[in-house]
Length: 75
Image 1 (cartoon, rainbow, N blue to C red):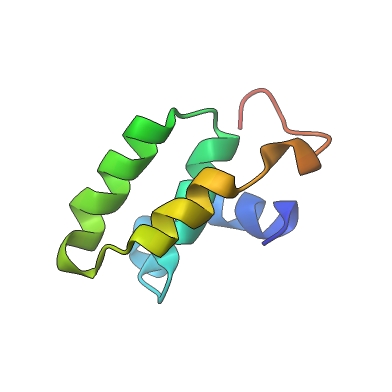
Image 2: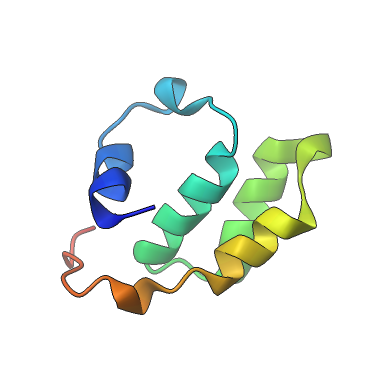
């Protein structure tokens, strides 16, 4: 997932985000928005419910925001 994709996600209504593995994409977006992992995981588990996966949470935890050199402050 690259910065352009995450930028697009940030401007899309939540109704359009109901796709497979959406939780990972939103979790990565939240990490770029400087959310804490506890809050990211809480939101993920709340919406994923029985479909929540440890592998998804691991992916979000290991997602490296430092690879994005120009993250807008208001993002």
